[in-house]
Structures are given as structure tokens and as C-alpha cells.
Length: 176
Image 1 (cartoon, rainbow, N blue to C red):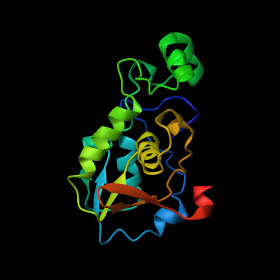
Image 2: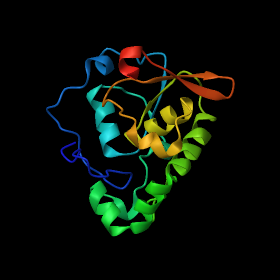
Image 3: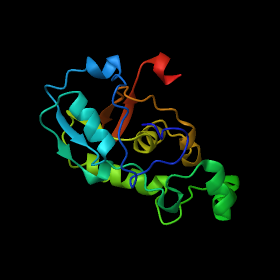
């Protein structure tokens, strides 16, 4: 999106994708035919699905981006300036909750609940915050460091269910 400039764009922000920007080659070449498709209800996810000309998909509220609450649309420095408890939590390495919004634990819990209800052959169209939570949990990264995970836009990221846990399945180049 045009607003993808470092500000918090969460579940409450209904913005368009950049119309003339191409879909990544990895996503264009992905074979969706044997998968059940689920998407966040956000406009930007549905527009991506439409660009890929996918006919059938299910909307899932649990795939929404993190709810940033009153931090929605603000830049990190603005949030830290306006909400002192957040900078205190960062120093303590806590999983802070955004004002009137969510924290990583809340996001991961809703995703985990959602994943328990779908079959293994599914594709999810979702957001950076959600994917960061899945990667962070899978790789056992401390929750207060999940924000450091860089998720490339439009790049398919695969998880494999092993036992009752989803494990990241990714090539070394992308992993680094």
C-alpha cells in the first residue's frame, strides 16, 4: 500500500494495494489448485486474491492484522511518545499491549485457535504481524523480539504441522 511506510497499519485500516504494482513471481507461480484458501477480511488481502484471479476463498476474522488500537496509523516514535507504558515495557522486554488493541500473545492465540480448525492443505492470506507471530513461535524467538522479524511482502511462507506444532519450512537464503 502507499501507507506501507513504517506506520502501524493494523486490522482497522482499510486501504487499497498499489494497483499497478506487480505480484511477486513466487506468488504468481504458486499452484493454488489443491489448497483451501483463507483470507483476512481486509481489503488489501482480498485485492491481492483478486489480482491472482482466485475464484474460491473463505474469509476468516482470525487472520486479521494485529489490532494496534489507538496506535493505528501512527509511527513508532509517536506511539512511544504518547504511551509511556510502551517504552517502559520495551525496556523490560515485555509483550506490551497496544492501547485499546492487542499484543503478540493475543494475536498468536487467535491464530493458533484458527489453525486447529482448518486442514493442513490450506493457504492463508494474512499480514506481517500474524506471520511474525507464527515465525517467532515456531523458531522459539523471545516474544519481545518478534517485531524484528522481516517478512517479505508477497512471498509464500510455508509451515508444516509436526505433532501439535507448526514448524517454519523455508530455504536458507530467505531465512537469513
